[in-house]
Image (cartoon, rainbow, N blue to C red):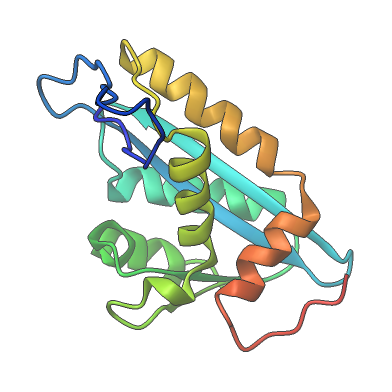
Length: 171
């Protein structure tokens, strides 16, 4: 609920102020994915927003199940080292699926994760200076921002190129 503060202009002598009601730490958690389908030469962006709850291993397994229903071919998942991603529950689920393979980014290397650039873009450009009145308003604004970006092929390819992953995209 705390607003992302960005630099701004104001008349001389008038300090700009953001009025917010974030008296306690309340948040919207998100799981996000960028998908690359080389055969179709198409990128996709998928997200799940959770108000007032953290991402846990049960939710991660549910998202992996949805991912496998969406893609019929074998899937390689590249992700960060969030504890929920490395849990025994997730490992057991992945081991039971021959068509699902996990690879982790190196520790402390968010610059290699293209989804981090998506989050950064949403936080700075879409949620910057935004002071929601409640979690529903924050959830709606974040979902709207992510939905606007999910079909923009050039933007999604830019996130992947900016991460400098050792892969080539031909679009």
